[in-house]
Image (cartoon, rainbow, N blue to C red; front, side, top):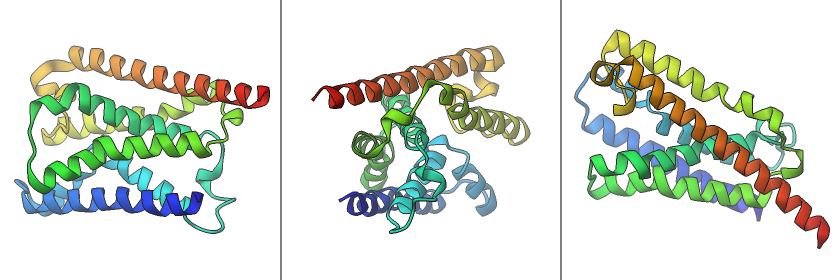
Length: 206
């Protein structure tokens, strides 16, 4: 069952990322190399790609030695993709209205993939082995991402999201926004650890 779900979820994630790449190239407003760089400058794309790679690795028959097989890795990935979904629903959904295939892909990237990843986490994460000390390590990826987009944005003038657009809102607001997202990461991470520990306790009681 786990392998079948992994294959199905990997297909969904890869489909969304690949079609989004095609759509972005078809509607590009910059050169091909610049468009490719911009494509991979979105946290949404990077994280959905990470999810796709994760499910692909889990679909293999022998993955016991996989990087992703260690307890906590699935929790971290789930937190990342949940942040993608929540920020889109709360902040970004209201500022544009995609249509056609773009709308379908948008929902896959921001709604469907977060939900199926969360379901997979509930089913297969080794929750009893996930602990609080892992949270700082989970924050390294978003910290590196923020540093990258700010540096590249300063050089190229392109910022993938309005809430990190230094040109329009300034560094002080960027700091406030980043702090808010950091808090969201920590809350989600803590919540998932608490849920995981609670489920372990309940399973022991039964």
